[in-house]
Structure formats: structure tokens, C-alpha cells
Amino acid sequence: MMVKIYSEEHFRKNKFKESSTNKFKHINKTVMITEINNLPANMVGFRATGEVTENDFDNTVIPKVKELVSATDTLNYMLVLDTSVKNFTAGAWFKDAVMGIKKLTKWNRAAIVSDVQGVKIFTDIFSVLMPGEFKVFEHKDQQLAVDWVSGK
Image (tube, rainbow, N blue to C red; front, side, top):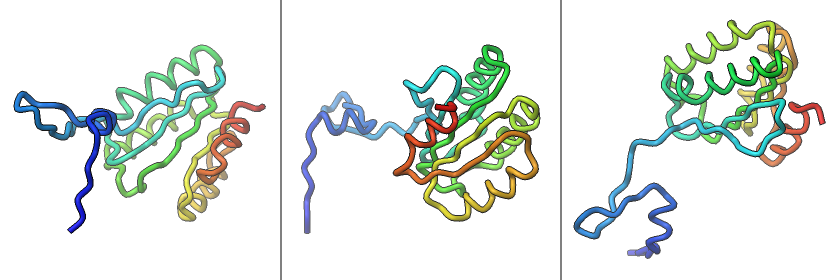
């Protein structure tokens, strides 16, 4: 039997919390879409991990998209998929579709970062139906995705 020993720092960094009995327990309430910081000012970017829900879109994505469109009158968007698309709930897909329709004329460039071939095929088909440019990048090319979306 193999036993791994972790430091307290590891537990704190990985969403574990010390309880009153000095043992660590896992904290389950996490946001599954987070904003990616330090991007060019003319774009927004998000990272999806674990199960993505409607609340993730309501509380994280949509407010930032609205803020960017208000400031620039255009939408440059990047989504890094660090989870399977199967982990998006029906509500999350609905919110994503509604955001797409509401901002239909504002789309400029959108990058999806994923190593899954099915995501590329779907994005290629979707891009024919939507205004703006949509492109898939592999994870190793995330900086290229940022440069492309921002127009650098």
C-alpha cells in the first residue's frame, strides 16, 4: 500500500480547510468558471473546471461580458476548457446560448481552448452560423489564443 503525505500548504492551496479538530476536510463549494486575469483590456477570458452550472454563467461570465461590451461595443471572448463538455449542466448550456443570442451582433472573436477534437468540429460548424470569428486552440497554444482574440 502506498501512502502519500502532503503538507498543510498543499491542503490549503487545494481547497481544504482545517477543522476545529485540527484535521483537514475538503471544501466542496467552488466556482467552476473563473475569470482569467491579466488579459488585454479588449477581451474577457474564463477557465472551466469540474461541473459548470447556470450559476457560474450568471455570477461570473455574464457580468464580465456585459461590462466588456458596454466598454468596447464588441465581444472578444476566450473559454479554456479544463473539463469535459459533458460537465456543463443543461442550465449552463442554456445560459451560454442566451448570452450568444443576446450579444449576436457584438461577437468579434472567440477562442475555445481545448484538446478535444469534437469541440473543434462543433466550433467550426457553429462559426458558420454566427457573426464574428470562432477558433479552437490546443492548451499548449493558450497564449496564441489570447493574442488572436485580442488582435495582437
